[in-house]
Length: 592
Figure 1 (tube, rainbow, N blue to C red):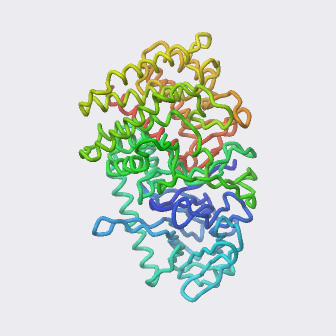
Figure 2: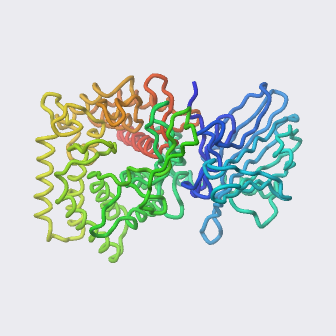
Figure 3: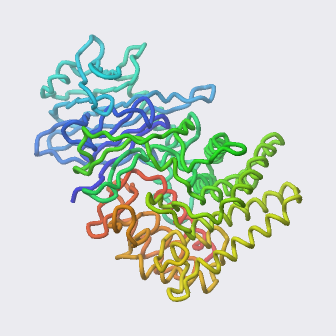
């Protein structure tokens, strides 16, 4: 079965996807959301890649080096064998800063015999919008655009450069390297230098993994997911991307294709909670600061998502010249959802600020800045909580009174009250408590459907929605409340298909959803565990883990029938939920 059998390599500046056969099929340089250098994943013919072609008698095996984001692909025909070690350099300088250039290093290690291969180097710069010209220029191969906006990359190697350009057969008689860089190098690139970068990068990742909190259950899966989240972190600002890709479809042949190389505010509280729980407080604090820095202080509209440098304009464009993943067009860059009105954003934002006060020390100046934001948000909630919106799933049709959006408005007021109690600011407490109660009663009376015996997707609807499973996690309802137990059971019955969850089953902008949204299955597992159905929850969890790709990575969606990974990849939200669910099982295990 075809699948998203890719590994991610990265250095917190950019990332690349390497296929199970060692082909770099997606990479944007110099940073995550730059135009692509390789985009074969979005168009087999036009996209461009960097791969090794070997005879059919070679077997190819791939794995991550232990507790790192360094990928090993081994080619072996029994007599001849070589290993390709792929990484993007990342390691600390003595002053505490990091060496993390927009480079990919492919260290080629001779294992035995005299293996032969061809290097297929085919960069297609600027999303392959125009022609890319590649030629040898002495110490490197230079690739540059010859039409449209200018762009270029440099390939260094100790293999014969003309053999690479001409795709001649190369016989490997010693170790070798390839180094792709966005910048021209000022020092000679040698095998020894490439090997030193490899060792330093390996040491960095192993040290990072060692600092990750250990748990008695699912430790290997937790660490791999944590490493993936780190690879999706933009060091410069602390932003965490939703995924490394754009336009990988939720369903093959359909048009649910979005650009996920941005930072969603909705993911923020979960990112901070999980990363802090893993012991990486510096990363959690930096991401929290990114969110705080991005938030407008008073009247300006809060967006649901921002660029990784805090950009507000994420205008959506179409790349019609690319056929899309498995011919699933359109290919999009930018994301029109940034202009949507989603009332849940206020609760997410307040939850993030609440975590700032609970988990981190805050200076007086910082606290005053946050207090201004808190007052502004509560005012917005007061004015707008009764209005319909697009909801958590960013539906592009009519607005509705989504239960999840109302829930998060309640969360906004609940956390504002908790923060005011921490700060000893009592002026607004009576008013805020009254509003919190009003929102609670509204959800209690209008979100519950007596006939269905569950909280439903929206007011007056019988449709169920996986997002209501989060009502307990946010503190709106207790795990032993009959309404919550009934909601979990009804949602499982209606939306669970062979252990995988629909987000919802009612028609949306594009018809009825036909793939499982991975994080929703984690939500169900966590909810079943909390209402006491732990054995069933563990069985679902183990089954879900078996649907990861060969490297333990998850995308956004899973096909119900084939269990094929779908959607943008790797998906931060999926790996966040995996970690949180595994930790919850571990905590229960420790108690026992």
